[in-house]
Image 1 (cartoon, rainbow, N blue to C red):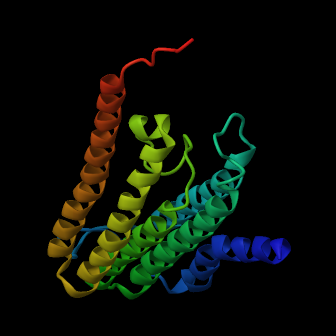
Image 2 (image 1 turned 180 degrees about the vertical axis):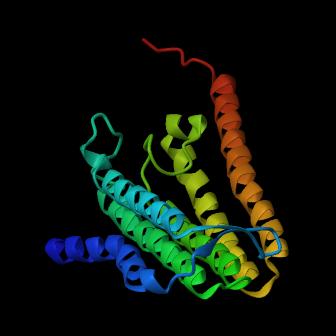
Length: 229
């Protein structure tokens, strides 16, 4: 099974580059390289610039996958073995996401699509956040992945409650981004995206801090225990 997964991952890594190689001769001299908030192309570049971008994204994809898949080997990593399987699944999904985004960019460059790409990519980001949110429930405290807030890292109960709330928010927020990317103009989709991102960061942070303050107050009120002889 591991051998099949390893082969599949490398196919995913290389698929965008193979696709680019196949259509290379059919690409125009100038290809779209950037879109404005209205989803309209505002900068063109050469085919070589597109190739360089594809190589960089592929390199980042490979590096991210192997880092997440092997983070449990780094010492000391808190709860590394407990998070191993979850990290590997997240690494695989992130690799599929990055490769898919790169394929969409290459397709857009080949077909001079104007309004199609930005919304699709925004929806893909939303699906990725929903997937990560779905896995937040089971991530154990660590210094590498998750909502690594100082109060949550100090207390396992704080971490668990914060990630239960954060997981729900990220899952729902990701779905909202997906819907916005598919059905709203790109400008409005970006507005929804920014609002959701702020919510996904602020609410779990405030919630975790309040839990920390409540726990601290409880300890202070309880006071030191007097031993009986």
